[in-house]
Image (cartoon, rainbow, N blue to C red):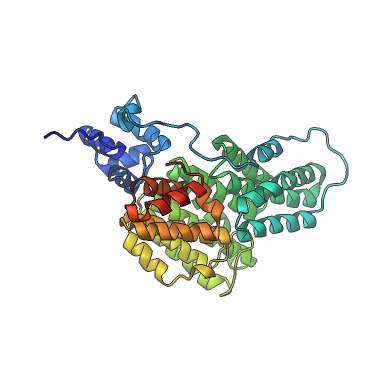
Length: 403
């Protein structure tokens, strides 16, 4: 008897890829995705998102995305949840302060405010709600200071303004308009360059690289990161500890960027970052804004292994890493999501759900807004064994995911 079941979007991608005579590696390269991503889309371990479909379609000769999703799939253009404070942050980003007066906040005050904001981001269980409350005032104060100060004070104010834009990018990354994310990157880079501060410029490149990578421009991200490393590395030996911190963070970003494209040289970048942290930073060092530290290096190892499609390596790397040692609630929540992704790759659905519960207990907003967590929850709520499906549905609904 003929099987009348509609093929999944992944199977449709696989069928069209084979018909086009493309290997997974070739399609991935053309579409700006990693071979692992294409593999997981085809075997159903990762959902075919609208953005991935748009990247893949031209190379498969597809002009109607219905050929990929099928007639029974409903596409929503509003699938990313929006945080309630996005509009307040948008208004702050687009307030240009044409006419301003009064006394600007001092660079020292701004630095304290920025550090306090990042401390909140890393320690709050509801970091996005906290940041959404802080950001409008912080953007206003740093924008005004950059306009009103002169000389050295203005350059310091510009460096703090760049940090405000970086925090805005972190806040917007999972639930803001893409255009707003690009605005924060561009503004942050412009402020850092005007500040003429190597650390500020390197940090701006770090944030730009994350966004470039997320839209399939990994090669450009690596080029910019290479420039930033060349700017910072000569200053590490004789400069303050922040230079070594920044250099390690740049190598970690490069490692993750390579891993997302299936490039095993990610481990070389990771090894370099680990060497910098162990050689040039004190054993208990934790970057105030970056959270660069020995535990964070191990967090990145797990992330790289997952993105390279190697769940066994991810679990091996995670085995000796105590999540309690990760010096950021936000990063700890994301670490549990990465472990859930690793378990999901192996089809261990009970373990996957358990780890998502751990992530939710650590940072509910990480699960609510993280695309990978939402994708997994959606599949668990519809495909998990009956013994855990009700539990999966309950967690999905709590995270705002509608199966």
